[in-house]
Length: 228
Picture 1 (tube, rainbow, N blue to C red):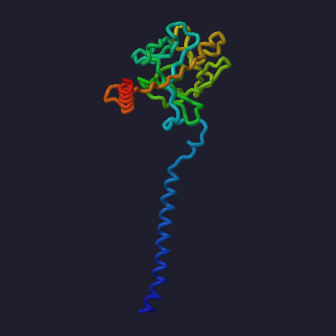
Picture 2: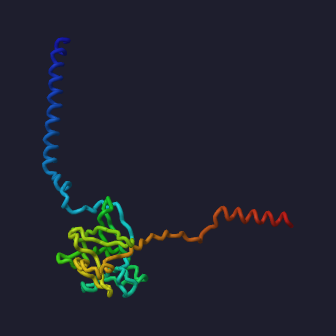
Picture 3: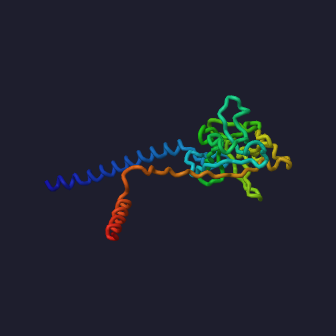
């Protein structure tokens, strides 16, 4: 009986080693197949499109153009079938649903997209450098770089073409991106950024009185009774 056990132990050890080797080989083949499917070039390529799916910053703001004389000079996104009326800088402060924008930036804050808070449309450049609104902002022409001037104004430079900037003329109509080359219109491409903070919702004051108020009234009644 003891001899049979001694003969079985080496067989069990070899069987265990074989099972472990088989598992390791299967895991190696599985991992290699996964790595073959992954494309690491898109994570290293400098020209790849920035990903905003995991955006770290979302700020509510309003943009005021410096050379617009119509209205309050606020950039507004208007839902209209006529493209010429969708985008302008003639917005007024009371038109909150049109002038309320959201700046969606990447994790480093170097690039951003401008989106309407209510209508969810994005500010983009067309292929010819014209400012338009799009339902989706996944293209590189919808990405901008924020630059600060000496006068503490901001300029929005296109990430697709560094020569293009966001601008509006004195009547609030959008200018083509390459029009910034003229020094006479330099202010038409400068904006004041007005950040908007969320107003906290106040709770209603009606309902049963708080315990502190009840105790205060009780103390007041006691003082009145002792005084009399």
